[in-house]
Image (cartoon, rainbow, N blue to C red; front, side, top):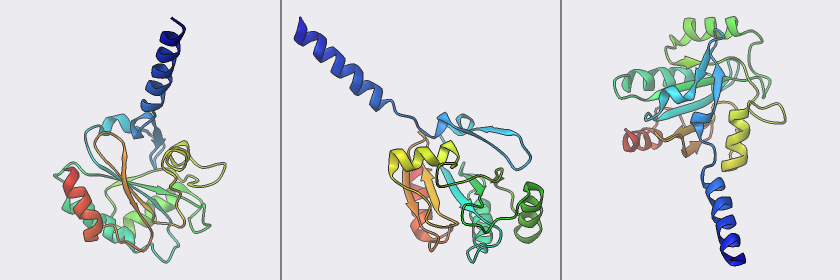
Length: 174
């Protein structure tokens, strides 16, 4: 009987760890302050990118816009999380929104300004760091999640969002 209890305890512990969080356990506010529940995107691949308006990689907003346009009818969700974690973001959401719309005609999701690293990182980025060991080293790090909310791959700032490396992975998920 004691062995049976130990066995059941192990199964419960293993089941608890196998039911770890996924992307759908999180929410974030958009640039206008509205709550975005990631549950709304179940079944769709999501490209999450930490961005900044005053960075050498800021022109990748154009690549993100191109990618958004190319996959508009294919259920790809693109979410940009403006961040000042690397001290290159504007200080007000309204300024970020205007900058993105005027300069890059962004139509994908922009979130509120958040931290993406350190103790004050948004819980979503804390989860990515804790469960996947991935933290953005700079602005425009990209994370691709499958339709089940699991991280599939990630890319550094050097990889453009509409590169073949990324689009081939997206195509596998769609």
